[in-house]
Length: 486
Figure (cartoon, one colour):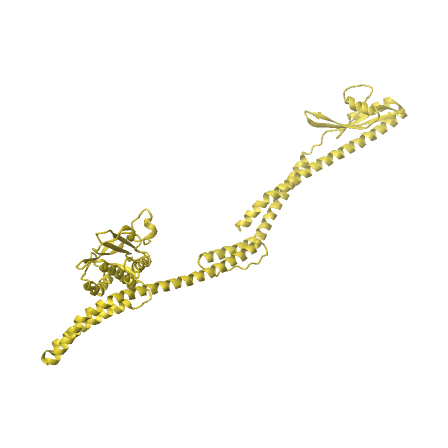
C-alpha cells in the first residue's frame, strides 16, 4: 500500500502541472479572443458612425454633424465616440495614423501607459462630397479580466482538487490490485524463505515485470531447494565418513592395546589356574580359593568390557557428563599399555565435579588419543600427567577474537591437559600436528589421524585444543570444554 501511495504522489504533481498549464493556456486564449472581439466590434461601430456622419454631412452640412458628434462625446458608455478633425493637428491622433486616415483608411491603434496597454482606438474616415472630411474615433479602455481570471482560478482549483482525489483513489485501487497484491505475496514468500521454508512458492498471475519477478524467484528457490538437498546429503555423507574415520581410529587404538591387555590377562589367568588346582588338592580351602577365582574373573571381565566398550561403535549422543568421571574411566584401560612401556599414569583433579554436555564416547576417544601419544613419546620410567582443572573463557589472540571462536556466551571452561616428559617437538612440527595424516612416526606405527580426530571432536563440542611443546621439555596438549549451564 505504501508503494501505491508513493506512485500516486509521484504522478500527482505532473497531473496538477498539466491542469495548471491548461488553465493558463485557457486564460491566454480567452484574452486573445476577447481582444479580437473588441477590435472587431470597435471597427464595426466606428464604421457605422462614419457612414452615418458622412450621409448626414451630405444631407444637412457640416455643423449638424459636429453638433451630433459633440453630443455623442458627452454620453457615458463602455466606449467613447469622438470627432477627429484631420485639418487640425491637435495631437489626439499620431501623425502616421492621421496620414493613413486622411488617405481614407480605417485604422486601429492602442495607447500605451508606462509600457502597459491603454485605450484601443478604432478610427474610421468620414467621406462627404467625395472627400475625407474627418474621422470618427471609437475608443475603449483595456479589458478588465480580473473577474474572469478569478472565476477561472476557482474553477481550475475545484477541477484540480477533484482530479487529485480521483487520481489518488484510482491509483490506490489499481495499485493495490496490480502492484500491492503481488508484492504482498512476494513479501510473504520472502519471509517464509527466511524462516527456512525453501518450498514457499508464489503464483504469478500477471504477464508483466512483477509476474516475471515471481517466476524468476520461484525458479531460484527451485535451484536453492535442489542445492540444499545436495548439501544436506553431502553433509550427511561427510558425518558418516567422519564417524567411520573416528571408529577406525578407535579400532587402531584397540589394536595397540590388545597385546597389552593380553599380557594383563595373563596374571589373573595364572592365579585362576593355580587356585583351581588348589581346590582339587585341598577341598577344605575351596571356599577361599573360589572367592579368589571370582575376584580374578571379575577383574578380567572388567578389562575385556572396557576394551569392548571402547571399540564398540555407537551413534553420537550428547548428554550431561562429568568430565572427571570420563577421565577416570579412560585411565584403567590405558594402564596396561603404560605399564608395558614402564610409564606411570598420574591423574590430578583440582575440581570434584566437572559438569559438561558431551558425547562420552567421543570425549574419551579424544583423551585416549592424547594419552596414547604421550605414552609413545615417553621414555622408560617416565610419567604422563593428566590434569583436570577449572579454566576461564577463551583468550583473545591477534588472529582470533575472544567472542568469535569460543563457546558463545560461555562463562568458563574445564581444562583437561595431558603432559609428557618426552623429547618435545620443534616449531615446524608443532605447527602441523593437527593436520590429517601428518605423523613423524615410521610407516605402520601411526595413521596420523589421532590428533586431527581429537581436534575435530573438541571443536564439535564448542571447545578448543592447545598444544605447547619445545625440544627437550616435552609436550602438553590441553582440551578446553565449556561448562554445562546450571
